[in-house]
Image 1 (spheres, one colour):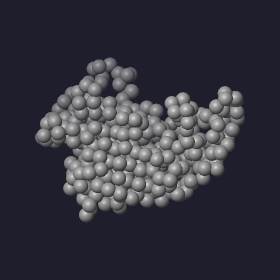
Image 2 (image 1 turned 90 degrees about the vertical axis):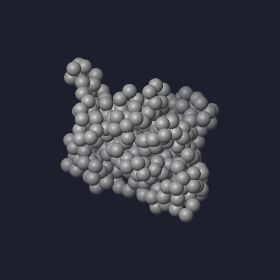
Image 3 (image 1 turned 30 degrees about the vertical axis):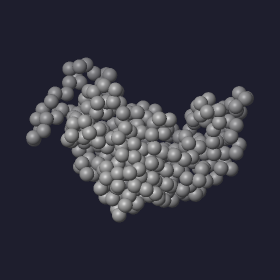
Image 4 (image 1 turned 180 degrees about the vertical axis):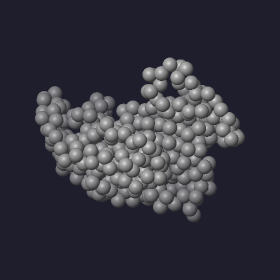
Length: 357
């Protein structure tokens, strides 16, 4: 594969560039007979699309999804599902002055080294706009997961040095930063607006929770569930770190402090503290899967920066165009989508090998 697809049984491939005519996804391996509507997919895309608040880029994209194949009379047919989203509000003129530069923090340099050619309009394939295809494919994965009673949701738990003290899932959609702690959310909004006024950007942390995931998912060595989830989440352009459960806090503890004994809770055996975040030895335990991802500050800022052009000449420049001062709120639905795609793929792989979930 050329790196544009994810999954072995449930396979999602995305295509398109930021300023091209369209972007989209092909979903192959979706089970047949699943009820699926255009509106269901659109609801997820509406959460990711730009221009929803003062905290996001002002680019106005409807992100209207068209289902081209794989769905008949409201149900999946088992054949590839084609999803198309046409680009409408592009302004390539803002990038004319940057086409011979390597923007700091962007994929320009890497693409140039790899291919010897790159689409400089808004970052082309490396733009965050590509994630709309992931969210569309992830919406189908979420719909399949509903059949298994699995629920995935994510929220912004940190912006800069401001960290949420609670995780109340029902509060995530009630504030523009998508924070699960309503009191902390307002502090985050104020900080984002402050750095925006200064022409700057800021990073943060998004936490993903997958509830109701059955135990036994994942392969014991090279296709561990946490390894494939980490790979999927790290494939999101702005993500620079991943941890599960207590994550890096474990490095500060002794083994006796980090011990997490198994207990019986009701009719189910589980770990007492879920320190591992629902995955042990690469296989799900049935406990909630808890993941946190570190999201870097948006690299495109209004302040002057230094770089070099393709000939190595030093240049001082300013980025034009429309950019997010904090990308965390729009990473939330993308992180959910990537998590859903991996879990569905492992459910179908488990069903194929062991015959039951």
